[in-house]
Structure formats: C-alpha cells, structure tokens
Amino acid sequence: MHMPSRDCCFFWLNWFFCFFFTIGLAEDPYVSFDWSISYITASPLGVPQKVIGIEGQFPGPILNVTTNWNVLINVRNNLDEPLLLTWNGIQQRKNAWQDGVSGTNCPIPAGWNWTYQFQVKDQIGSFFYFPSLNFQRAAGGYGGIVVNNREVIAVPFPAPDGDITLFISDWYTKSHKELREQVESGAGLGAPDGILINGHGPYRYDNAAVPDGIAYLTITVDPGKTYRIRVHNVGITTSLNFRIQNHNLLLVETEGSYTVQQNYTNMDIHVGQSYSFLVTMDQPSGSDFYIVASPRFVNSTASIKAPGVAILHYSNSMGPASGPLPDPPNEYDTHFSMNQARSIRWNVSAGAARPNPQGSFKYGQITVTDVYVILNRPVELIDGKWRNTLNGISYFAPSTPLRLAQQFNVRGVYKLDFPNELMNRPAKVDTSVINGTFKGFMEIIFQNNDTFVQSYHLDGYAFFVVGMDYGVWSESSRATYNKWDGVARCTTQVFPGAWTAILVSLDNAGMWNLRAQNLDSWYLGQEVYLSVVNPENDKDEVPLPDNTIYCGALSPLQKDQAQRINFFSRSSSRSKSMATILAAIFAVLFLTCL
Image (cartoon, rainbow, N blue to C red; front, side, top):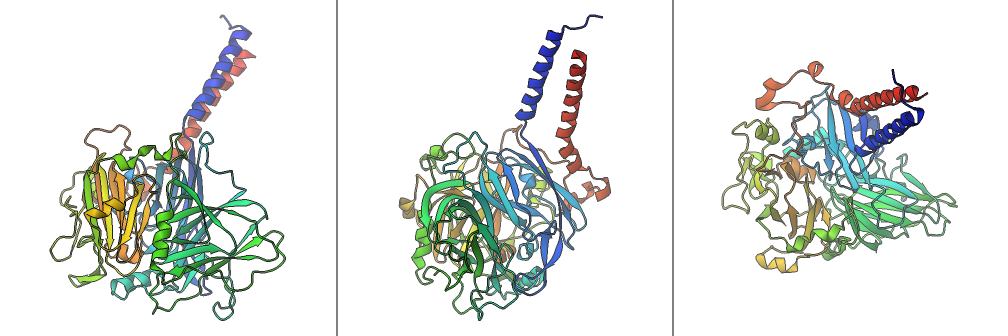
C-alpha cells in the first residue's frame, strides 16, 4: 500500500484545517436558552404579590446577541394559563411563525414547552420581549434584547465603558387577572400604584411620599467613564419621563436605528418604546444622584403615586443623594413632548447592521401604493361588552391563528376587508385584516380621538415616522412630512387630539400584528393584522416549523406533548454533531501523518 509522503500528508492536513475553520466561521452562530416561566413572589411596592418570573428572575434575563445570530429559546410554561412571548422589534425576516402573538401562533398550554427559533437578521439595537396574552404583561415576564453590531461594521460613537439596561414601567398591586376583569367591566385601569425601575420601587427620597421598607435599585458606575444606558418603557398604559439628576442624555439609538446625536436633559418615553443614551459620569462625586421615571399625561384628577426613583452611585461617592428630584417637563406644555419627538432624527450617514448607510433607502422618493387613515376612539359598548376599535372595528381573535389558517387554507377565519378609513356604520367586533401588497409602500396615519397618549407597534417591520401634529390629518398635512431623515423604528406615539404618519415598505412576507401598545386598549380589541403575501415561491421564507402547536380548526393535527419532536435538543445539537464529525476526520488525518 502506498503511503503519502509526510509533506503531502501535512499539506492535506493544513488544507482540511483551513476548510474546517472556514466552514465553522461561515455559518452564523447558534445560541440556545432554556427558560422556565412561572409565578414568583415579589414586593416591588412593599406589598407581596405574584409576578411572572423567567428562571426565577423579575425582570427576566437579557438576550445579548450579535446581528445574524440564530437564537433558540425553549420556553417551559409553568403558569396556570396559556402563554406566548413576543419579541418587540425583532423583525423575524420571512419568519412570522416565531412572532408570538395570537394571530400567528397557538398558545403554549400550561405545563407545555415550546421552542422559538429565529435569526436576528440584519438588525442592531435595543429591544425587549414580553408575554402577549391574557394581560400577563401587567404581571411582568419581560426582559431585554441587545443586538450588537458585527465587528466588521463600524459603530458611530466610541465604545462605551459599560452597558446598562433599565426597564421603567407603571405598576399595579392588583393581579393581572383582576386588572383584565376591571378593564372588561369598563372601569378602566385608573392611575398606577407606582412606577418601577428594573422591578424595584422608589428610593425613599421623601419620607411622606415613599413608605419605608421598599427595595430600590442602585447602579454603580466609575467617575469619568461613559456608559450606554438602554431604557425601555415596558409598562402597560403610562407615558414616562426619564432623567438622571445633573447628567446629560446623549441619544444615539432607538429601536434599531442610530439617531442624530443630541443631548437631552430628559426624555418622554411612551409605552413600548426603547432608547439608548450615552451618559458620561462627569459630575463631582460628593454624593449619589437620582434616576427618575415619572408619569406623564395622567389625568390630573387621578391619584398619582410616587415616581420611580433609583440611585446612580459613583464608586467614589461620599454620601447619599439628597434634595428635591430633578424637575419634569411642564405638564401643561402640550407641545413640549411633540417637539421633542420631532427632534429625534435618523443618522443617515451611519452604518447599521450592514455596510451601506442607513439613509441610502431614500424613502421620501418612493411612490406610495396604499394609504390607511386609522382612527381610534374611546372605549364603547358593542353588543353589551366594552370594546376599543380601530376604524370602527374591534378585533376578534379566532381560535385558529390567522397565519395557520392561511397556511392550511382554512376558510371563514378572517376577511381581507379592513377599511382604509372610518366607515359610516355602527362599530362592530370582527376579524378584519389589512390586505397588504408585497413590496408595496404603505402610508399609515394614526388619528387619536381618545383623551390619552396612544402608542402603536408593528411587528415584522421598522417604519419611518415622517410626521405628527395636533388636529385632524388631511391631504395637505403631507407638506409637513420629513422625507429625508425621519427615524426608522417599530413603535410610535400618537398624542390625544393629534395624528402621526408613518411610511413602511412591505418587503417582509407574513401575517403581522399592528397593535396599540397600551395594554387595556389592545386587550379590548385595538389591533389589526397586516397580511403580506409573496405571489412567487420564496425559497428563503421559513417553512412551517416541525414543532408547530395546532389549535382551533387544526386541533386534530396536534400531537400530545410527549409525542412531539424535541425540537430544541435537535436544533441546538445540530452544530455540535457537525463539529464532532469534522473533528473525527481531522483526527484521522493527523494520526495518518504521524
């Protein structure tokens, strides 16, 4: 038998070594998580209550990943009711099956587990996740998502010395089940019992305003260093003003878009919105500083509890924070918050998740193909039940998710007839869907006829916020649009008695949820789905997952939990198996060459 020469052998060994690592580096990485979601006891406002924890944590763990990574999350539902998690701002490119809302997924039954698998494709920035069913967000179950740039893509600011995530939220001491019954009765939520920061109640800045014995959050930093602080309003109905005593907030990113860098002394953050600030610790360190989140636009007759207060502690601080809290904006200056929102602009010269500049899309030069003027109204009685509407329609969630009905051609589940403006007819409860045009360019105007600030979110997309103003939108309002550097994001606010206009390119096929982020309005029907169908066979579109849960008309297809494929184990071990095979081949070559 002819044995290869030593030089030849090591040539092939070196070639295989290079091939091995080329293959390993070519495939986007997989990261796996195993989460148990259950009730835990916490006392965020000093009163013991059941909250929803993830792996025993409230708030839940932060998903820290890099753009293009594949994420697998095995969720074990240990609650006493069905559950879905949705990934607020993660666009799920060509993969609506992982969206985690009632129109795309059957709920995970109590006692079951289900594995989400998605790729954070071509995204960067600050996002969060939360439970989307049964008013559960009012009990917690939320956490952060950090999507980092790949190293080959430049970031438009120096690397910070640390990264801090803050969750600000209104909070009620009633359970989420009591709150949803209250909303169903037409009583409304009322003012929150307090404001939390990272699941903690306020620091006792005022003995009369804050009871003793409440645990508060302390953030320790080093003087002279700069930190990226990501702030998410994960509350259910209240806009919050965020500020740090004596420190500037340099805005650099919101919901996946780098912004023109501007300093703010405070920022109004509305329900469901996320921002990144660079904060330099440049103050004298004689004492600690207040971090404050206070309610905005709350009815003046409501009982307003203490704001959320945490402590920013310099590592060489000489004493506790003292004195009054930094002042919030004037509550009666109705234009302050709108002007602040208008000042947030896209950094069109910065790269995002891809090398090309963010602004190369030139959205202002694209012809609009569809226009929807979507009007919301205060809660009203429809067929004896309290409901919220969009264009006179209150969404009814069928037992068969819309995307599954579409996939299996189940008739009668929904209608592609959502009106593009308010119709002259009585309000009704219906499953009416927007019929979007694949690769069309849609203009949506949200008109707020209610008395409080409303936030709207669109799954599957980032949209361009091009205009907002008080009054009633008209065709002439387009003359005020920002057609160059309106920020691209996934959640926008609409002020009472005002309108907000967005533009969105419908390049992501699927069934996507457009909803009020205010949980009471959403729960009572203020949502609609946007159907975007690619008329051609798209080989890149993710097929129906093997681990799909079936319900409604498709229940006969469902296997019980014990018979279902262990999708999590199979997917997470795939790359390990390939690595094992390649390593074995490498070992054989190496031994042959000895």
